[in-house]
Image 1 (tube, chains in turn brown, green):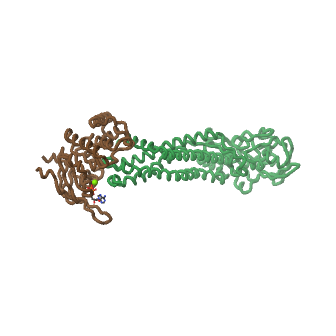
Image 2 (cartoon, each protein chain N blue to C red):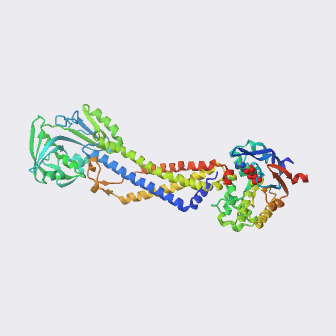
Image 3 (tube, rainbow over the protein chains, first blue to last red):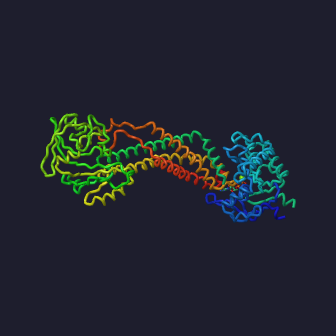
Length: 233
Length: 403
Ligand SMILES: Nc1ncnc2c1ncn2[C@@H]1O[C@H](COP(=O)(O)OP(=O)(O)O)[C@@H](O)[C@H]1O
Ligand SMILES: [Mg+2]
């Protein structure tokens, strides 16, 4: 059973110094995430959602507690090792600026595989079939500047999962989208979760997003106040 | 990390801001082109100066009797064996000339001047200006020619010309004055006028007879390569014990100083140009990196190593520099070709020949100088990009994404 735990947080705390006033973004969070789950971290702005996603994604380090991702404890890794972990195990979808402006959609999707050292033929084939399964083949040659916000986020999702990461982290992926586009995007995420078994951890304060996830975790002032999985269990 | 990918990103980022990078490129081309042209002109001047100094009856190495330099007179002489030849490989030697040189007074019906009276073997004088000069009238035919050739400027001063007679007075080996009449065979013409006013030439045997001694006062040797000078001078010192063996740098210290200065000038000029250019380069790179700070943060967030980000920025700078340097060298080269034999400065050149310079600036492009400019420019391009690269890498990916 334990091999199916992709993320495990134990007593994770993160405190920022904001003009020498300590801000407790996370206060002793315990959290487990199983392979194949679609979890939404919910909570008001400033409750610590982004911080939690960042420490899990190896973009930030907790002050206390341990985080294990796919069997690797993050505390022991240096910056380069964290960087490589992000490259090989994580998929990221940020609010915006996900794509490289000077590359076409296809090249953007190929980009991470290129960093990983996947050969050109395999890269192109995998990227194309990913665009195809997301119904955005027609965007292949366009650069981000010539795409709508929703289209850009779709390409970003394609890029983040084409490498088969153990985990897809999406922090407010729909923050800049209108509600119809948001629903399209969420349907896509749910489909990827159900059909391909992609593990998705998303953070949002948007009620529409929460409703799409199978499990919801509520954060308030840096602590988990409610976890729908716990109720079921 | 795939260099090809980084190259692709760098070139596309350069193309993203065509105007800005185009201007920078233009600045690099102009700077490199200007440095290339100015270097070739400096080299031209330097070589002309050295050439003029060596041609100035000096040679690369000159042998004089002890004391001749302080008191140039026929007493300070030496004898040279009939069939003397310098002990040196033929391919290292341009030639040598043995002369008699004494101070003298020259008189025409219209004027009197103090001069250096030099007896030469015209066949030996390919190595000096007198063998290379243009003539009105005739040259001296051999060492026993009894006529004189004088400079055109001196002829004007003395209001005389080819075919007329002159009287020359000098001291003989016995200490008594000798006076003799000479017919003017021809007037020689050099680039400046100072040599023309000083030197009057006749056959070496003629002058030896006049002063009453079968001796020489100087021996000049001209080499093919300047770098061979040191070795050669050492062997001459061994051979001519008791005589003074001097090289052109000792005989023409002013020209030698200018020669060294020209080497330094090439560097100074380059560093001034580069200094200005680097400011522009660093500035442009910082702008271009800082406006991409979120993008670069994202690249690192998804797993690109900081090293690769640095390489990407360094590549951008290097690509611009490489293209700029290549075009700059070509532009400079074309300009040099266009200049051809040189820029005529004779209108501004009053007194320039005093420094041994010619009145035309002749470009001499040296491959070594160009390689140096290219190499240093590329090096500076890389160095200049390290600071902006370091600045952007210092920003943590999360911080960068939040901007
Ligand atoms: N880099 C930072 N420096 C200082 N304070 C921060 C920083 N990042 C987050 N915080 C603070 O930590 C708290 C949690 O922030 P965050 O995790 O971004 O919340 P959420 O994503 O839920 O809006 C907030 O009070 C925020 O102001
Ligand atoms: Mg947030």
